[in-house]
Length: 206
Length: 259
Image 1 (cartoon, chains in turn yellow, orange):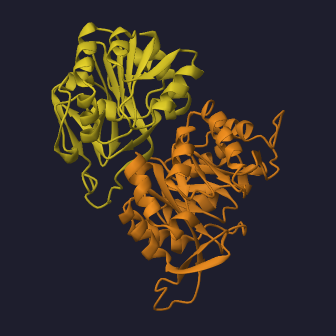
Image 2 (cartoon, rainbow over the protein chains, first blue to last red):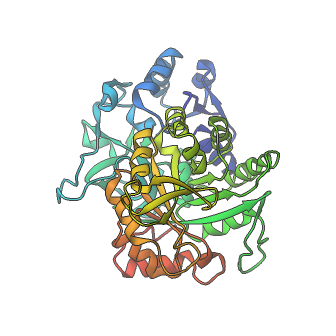
Image 3 (tube, rainbow over the protein chains, first blue to last red):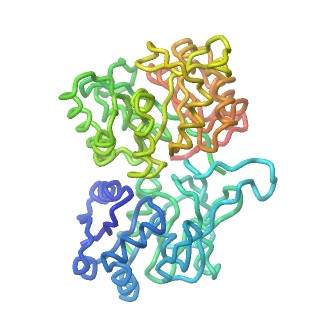
């Protein structure tokens, strides 16, 4: 079973629909036992870091996710799901799961190269992901390829080793990471057309 | 680099797309799911469904349409038309829409924007506005006035002021529908779109007036719109999304060119 973590926000059903479309059974759940026994876990969706962490703590799921990470079973974070993996987010000064060293920052108000163009935040729309490292999750995905983003904050891992994808929006930021069994993307795989479905399918085969 | 988005708009009445669309091949031209799939496979970056059904019981049909589209279409799409309450918005989002587009409902009850943003996040709430050029006045300093109810009823609000207020209330994107440009195929309302794009810190989507690919180039480059809605220029097969994107790429406009 594939567990989609229910944290009372975001577009959980979109991910569920994409998995169903790909032919995989899945369940949106907040039940710790179901998550512990799942073959794979997906942590998707949109939301604010602080509210997300509060919901996880209230349901005891922060520990469940940390434990799942240590089992070595495949785990996928999407959008807010990449941000809460790190130590801390600038969004409302939120303490996060601390599974990976690093922080989450807000986009600068202007482009860091030109200093003239005002950036619209959140970033909403299709942007290019450059694969900076080969990984099975990218199999069959053109490099670069466009994916759908909705975000005001971006992750800055302490170790560049875990970065597998980068994107430019005002500055170059980390848009995909992989560390052991843990993969996460800032972009929405479930809303990125064929390439997004391809990456989801790749995750399901890991 | 973030690309400019091209967003086909489909008008749906009682579960059927209202405009006959010149799709080639075996496509049920009235079926919203078929048409959504056609655009999805053809490179549309996003879709808008506009529910022009009047009565309440038929809204359930629209929810069924949204569910059916969401099961097959894996790009973002928004749904607008007649959304008046938080519950209306919730139903559409739960059925699988990425965003809701509120228009007359937001004018009648501006707090709907704030309630939607709090409940679902600003990125879900698109403020759509119908705008008409009028003589500049103390009440309408920009000379662009907000209308509701399909462009029939003037509101007495300045479009720039309403844009700014909508953002303060929590709207995540703004759709600027020009009543003057709509249906002319003479191009988007560049001045109005540019004025709003300069003013607000969120994406601005131009709507009304597209007749050829150059019109999209103009609104992207000259008015700095982030996205453009198309309807008749692609619905009737005159241009494809791919045609338009090829033209835009040649003109130096960044678009999502593979899908």
